[in-house]
Structures are given as C-alpha cells and as structure tokens.
Image (cartoon, rainbow, N blue to C red; front, side):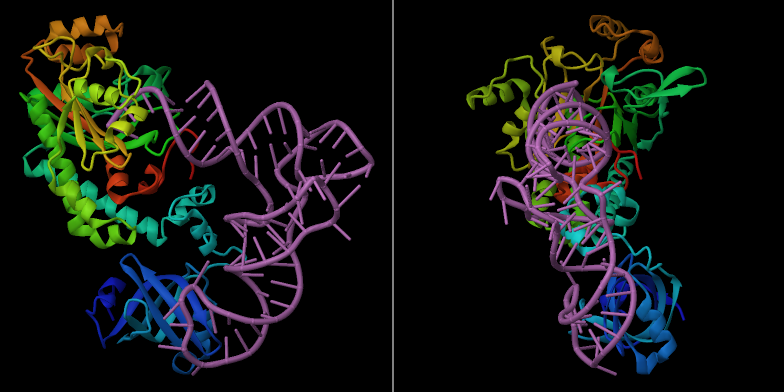
Length: 442
RNA sequence: GCCGAUUUAGCUUAGCUGGUGGAGCGAGGGACUGUUAAUCCCAAGGUCGUGGGUUCGAGCCCCACAAUCGGCGCCA
C-alpha cells in the first residue's frame, strides 16, 4: 500500500479509502479500549482512532504506549467525521511504531512551555531548537521562509539575472571593520564576509545583471529583535543602472515576496495571526521615496532632536516610520554618513546616490543600496578621504581601471523581510538555528 | 560597549513583614469505549544560578560572579 500525506487526507482526497500514514505522534488521549493518536507529518495532522477490538491487544498496547514524537506507520480507513479536528480521521486497522521514545526521556517541549513562550521564544525553546523545529509554529515559519527564498530567486531569474557566488573567506571589510569575524587562516587572519558586494562588482562587467542569496556575517553585539550575527543576504548588482532603477528592483523583489507568500502560504500566515489585508497592501502598493533632507525636516517638525549629517538611527527611523503603512525609500544621504563605495551625487557633492528601504511596523531597514563609486580616480580619493587602507581593496580598485561604468545594487535582509511579512516578534523566530552574540548552539 | 531586568522540580510558575517551599503541565501507577491541551484517583520529583556576608534563623536582606532576557549604539 502506498502511503499518503496527511494534508491530502484532510483536504478530502482519500475519503473512504484504505491508506497508510507515516508520521510522528503529536498527542494521544483516550482510555483503556479506545485511543486517539493525533499523528502529524510535514503536511498536517489527523486524529487516528485505535480500538482494542479492531487492532487486537498487542497492537493496541504498542500504539497506546507510544509517547509524543514517537514515529509510526498506521494503516486504516479514512472517514469524514465532524468530531475530528480537520474533519477527517483514520480508523486504524493496523500499525507499528518505527522509532519509539524512552519514557525516561520524554519529548521535552510541553504545552506549558509553548504557552509560556506565547508564540515567541524562551531560553528553553532556544536550547531545544533542534526539537522545537517540529512544532507547528516553527514548521509554519520554515515553510514561509522557503517560499520567500523561492520568490527572490524567481524575481531575478525571470529578469535573466545570473546567480553568482562570492567567497565567504575574505581579506577586508565592506561595512565597518569592527564588525568583522576573524578566522585563523594558516598563520594569517581571514574574515567572514559581511557582504557579497565587492566581489559582485568585480563580475559586473562580465555578467551585467547578477544576484545572490547567501549568508553574511557581522560581529555586532546587537541585542535587538532585528539582528543576527549570521543572516541571509539577498544582493544584486546591475551594470549601467541608476539609483532609481535599483530602487525599482528593490521594490519589485519585496512586493514579489509578499505576493508569493499570499499565493503559497496564506493559511500559514493566518495561522500565525497575520492579517492578510496588511500583507496584500505590501504586495500591491507602490513604495514612496523620500529624500534624506525631507526625512530630517519631518523629524525636526515632530520635535525630534536631529541635525543634518547625522545618520538615521533606529530610534529616529521608528518615529519616522510610525505613520507609514507601506515601506518607504529614503534616498540621498549626506556623504559624511555613508562608506566610500557610495557614489557622490554629481549634482551636489554633499550627498551620495543611495537608498534605504524602511519597513513599517517597526521592523526597520530591510534594504540598503545605491550607485557605486565607479571611476578609479574617485574611488581612490574616497578611500583616502575615509582613511581606509588600500591594500585589501586592491582587486576592487583594479576593476575600475579597465572600462569602469556606472553601476549599482542593493542588499536585502531576507530574515528581516520574512520576520516583517510573517509578523514575527523577533528575527530569531524565522530562522532554524539563530546565531547572535550570545548563542551559537545548538 | 552602555542601560534595565530575570534566575525556585524536566517545563511554566506562586512564595506575605526573614520563621519547616505550593501549584499546573510532563513523566510513573491505576480507572474509564468518542476524546479535542480529554477527565478522575494515587504516588514520586527541590543542595531555591554559583560563592561569600548579615542573622538565633535567608528562596526572601547585602556584596561579588555567572548565565539568560529586553532595550540602545551599529546595521540588512
């Protein structure tokens, strides 16, 4: 007999049929002659009814004694029954336990632990992440995550971008040097990459339109709901592109992710308590653009203490975005607030041609991007101006010596986007094994 | 790096002015033929984060340390 998925049984595909289910015990209840085994697999869960009279004493005892998360194979008849959660149940004819659970070491994640975490996380659940993954909340998050990754690849591949991989061991920083992870490297020091960008720029003259989805590493001791030390970074780079064109792609890919989640995971979003109308707004509305100067004026008008030239930290972003109901781009930051690779605005050299995309609901910055400093002369001047050493960037400077062209790109924090669209309380909730400054286990 | 908080059974927690630490869930034993976090009965489970101090007496007061959580800076 071919085994079937529980999700298909619950959707009515096997009503009245005799089927085999393979899964794990979610919960059991019942009495000495009748047991209800709630079995789950990757597609859902179903109540399985085990009657002593039907299966015999031996099988009844075996199935009754199986603890939560025991794996088993059950054969039986699919019945439509109002009393069962999901509307279907399996009248068990026979079954066996594949992998049991020792009563001395029962599955540690109990209902009380889940309730106490209130949909979020506790230290206990983080310590037992390897087991927490199989609860419905985490499974749901991982399915949403998969769809988000698929949407990113889909967006870029539909537009004939080439997926391109950069090294993870690097010699220099992209962002501030203080956030680099040092790695011993055969007697030298290497670093874990903070961004694919510099290596993407090297391939830009070859591929013109390229993207990646890869981990980036930042040794930030940040203790916030928006930060991980290892996060998934979707980055893209386009030859001949302007800041505005790059923003169109940023808006395009974020809206594509939101639309894909609505299409593929609307039940999952709802089960997490996410309002689908909100996600729909993110999928369908255009994302307004606002210059840095305008943002500063707005904030000053609200009585926020900020001077021109200051970067917008999270406390300021939060005030600025509190009335936004869709993501907004912030463009044209002062040169003094941004690193050397941002291209100076030819119309006003106090600014750079860059953008940040700020998500609403307090989820912060989800994209940072813009045009790159592309002439050799300018990049050398900007590197020296900021007191950055030239040596680690020699390959980067070199790319500009042979037919440099205007170009740009962005980096998108995939985990942040997922946390935002799923309405998660913390970025940790949307990645299977979160890494932050205090946790590298399990 | 800075600020704030927490730490009591496997998990989640209560614990009064300092006077013999209670419960729910889980796990164990038992009852029950339609349960929905099933229910009912029984029994077990604690060096109260670690180390010091005050006191006749500390889960509670004081000091140090540790782990964890939340927020900020920084960023995606």
